[in-house]
Amino acid sequence: MTTTLITGAGRSLGLETARRLIDAGHTVYAGLRNPDAGDAVRSIGAHVVRLDVTDSASVQAALAELPQLDVLINNAGILGTAYGVDDLDADAMATVLDTNVTGIVRVIQAALPLLRRSANPVIVNVASGVGWPRYLQDPTHDEYPVQAVPYAASKAAVIALTVQYAKSLTGMRVNVSDPGYTDTDFNAHSGHQTVTEGTDATVALATLDQDGPTGEFHDRTGRIAY
Image (cartoon, rainbow, N blue to C red; front, side, top):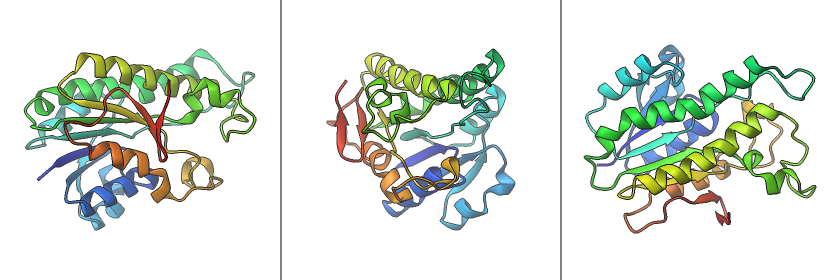
């Protein structure tokens, strides 16, 4: 039985990822900042654990509840409060980076002892095409109109972070996914993809075998070339 931990699993992409992996036979632990808000993910058969990626003690306590771990999906993330330059300050930047980037590091570092005991350890970091400069500069891409500096910078960092972890953790599959412009609470339901389409890349990367790729960036159509 494959045991999977998903951060930020209470709704939208995280909830759908949990549902699909449970259907695929995984035992899923859903990391939530507020377990009292976990009815939706409990209803699909996930085990809820209290996990705040900005709090090292919370992360350590959550990992201590797991009997084993084969797949880690770092899905938790925030958009932040700065949507342009005029409303941007250092605190707004730091808040987004602490959740979206440093939060991933907290969880991976705490999870490594369990992952190293797995026969097929997998890490999937959920980023975004908004962190991809080529898309941000191309008027034909959904990402082009986005002006938010913290969110874009944080997701660019997640992509680079994934490459570096993959180089260091050679016995694991470590990849990064781009959900695409998906209809979720995150964007006030303006996306044109369904949540199922938005989780295609994450689910595919979460179910890799040992001969699968590592250090790659994928969307639902496949690998995005660096």
